[in-house]
Image (spheres, rainbow, N blue to C red):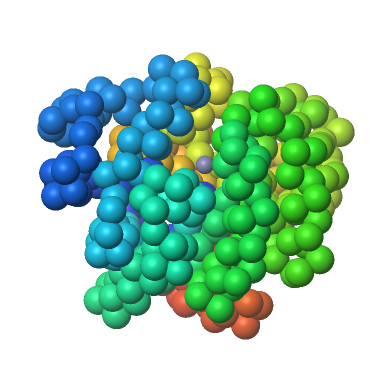
Length: 342
Ligand SMILES: [Zn+2]
């Protein structure tokens, strides 16, 4: 067994992935047909072309188009169930999955309870059929700050139904963290963890701002912290996790190539990193692919791959006893896997 086999078979955790961006292209095409919703393309090849990143507004348009293909609770059940199947195929044992609930409510005129019931029906079926499990991160779209109150209210009310955190995505260049600071303060007061995107489309000053104003449990991306040594020292000391998505960063033009990507430097600086896929079919990169990228482009060893996986458990929002149990399971599996390494 080589390191690619090891990457494929090893137990994993994924903490930075958007459910809308994880829908399989064939499923999206079928949903559009079934619901009589227009897609600008007709087949998988067309979809791949449509997904090719041009600029951030186009990226947001893609998201809007995807959301417009969904219509009924059964559609939400289907995409959640298929997500679970994808986890099982890659041996992802636990995930925290971002979902932009307010966009679905607005576009599809369904109450949030109906959407979440569909999602959770798919989650329960996937858990029983594949053993995959995950929590939801309901995120605020920065470009629609008027929805922040609504998203917080739903996230708090849905904590009994699998919501584990409040997220924040969208164009961080145009919408600073201050726009949502009060809402995040209230989430903190209510004990709901915060997991904002920061340091992807904008530099370290936006990361500092997110740390100060949003008191995050983790940062999604955060890679541009490499530009500020004081920030690196801060992240290292606090072990504030960064959920890094290397291929996503390349596709969105944050870095021109893997050789320019700071992942290895962030790792060597002692930061707590997890590795993730963000929007797998859009970027042609699922989590197994990202682990292979660690091997091929960042020189990661089996020891380091194992550490990335264990970091996922550590950085997750699972209760401490569940983390401990999962880590014991993972470590035992790694011992067996290593014996087959050549
Ligand atoms: Zn993301």
